[in-house]
Amino acid sequence: MEKFIVSARKYRPATFKQVVGQEAITSTLQNAIKNNHLAQAFLFTGPRGVGKTTCARILAKTINCENLTENLEPCDKCESCTSFNNNASFNIHELDAASNNSVDDIRNLVDQVRIPPQVGKYKVYIIDEVHMLSQAAFNAFLKTLEEPPAYAKFILATTEKHKILPTILSRCQIFDFKRIRVEDIAAYLDYVAKNEGVDAEVEALHIIAQKADGALRDALSTFDQIVSYSGDTLTYKNVIENLNILDYEYYLKVTDALLNGNFSDLL
Image 1: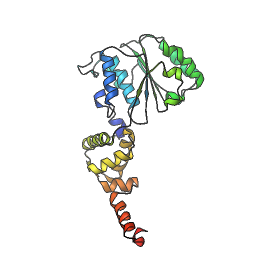
Image 2 (image 1 turned 180 degrees about the vertical axis):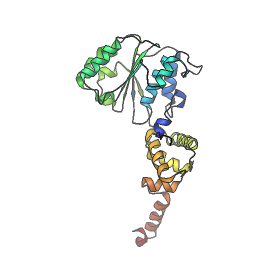
Image 3 (image 1 turned 90 degrees about the vertical axis):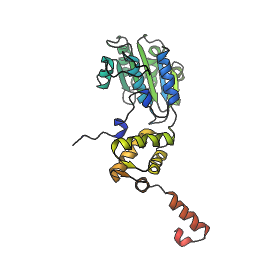
Image 4 (image 1 turned 90 degrees about the horizontal axis):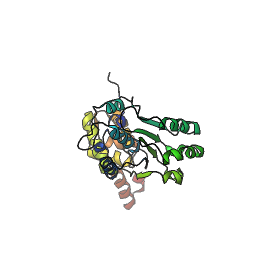
């Protein structure tokens, strides 16, 4: 039996072109790579599930690729790309600040920064949930963030920008990720449904997209849940039953009963 992978991981974008609903940010990053105007530190901020960590990984992979395509996308063939795809890259380090938030964790990271990359151009440090770092950890990180070696790049990601010290913010190039539009989420769900062989009604996908509140990851999780419930046919009725949503028809029945003074039907 084939191992099941949740859609949010299976369909995670691997290039800037595949990122949904963040065109302004992906274009800016691609132009920065093209013109060699890369800042030493980036801060990706915005609500959950909109592509912050995904864009951080794509940026890290792209700037280390040895044979970029004409569209400034990674080649997926060079040593740096293949090691990244196999989760074995020595140049790209991910740190979850929620569980590694002490001064010692940041000091270890600062010690690592001193070692130049063995393969590729840059060493990239992606620090997720950076707002969870302690005050002392932030202070230990300040100097390295301000004057890192030329080969070191930092990408910080957070959902709570207001919790980050102003001294950290002033050292970063800040990118505000927006909530993804309902139309964009519905179109992406349609693409996933076709790939998975699921016959989905357009109206059903729109309801899932609305319920996700701009977070594509949430929409994909809900999509998986409803496919488990309804099988290969995803209907509007199945979605409203599963998500406990009042559909338009029910709402109209209630308003009609109110207008006609039919309180027994209303109850």
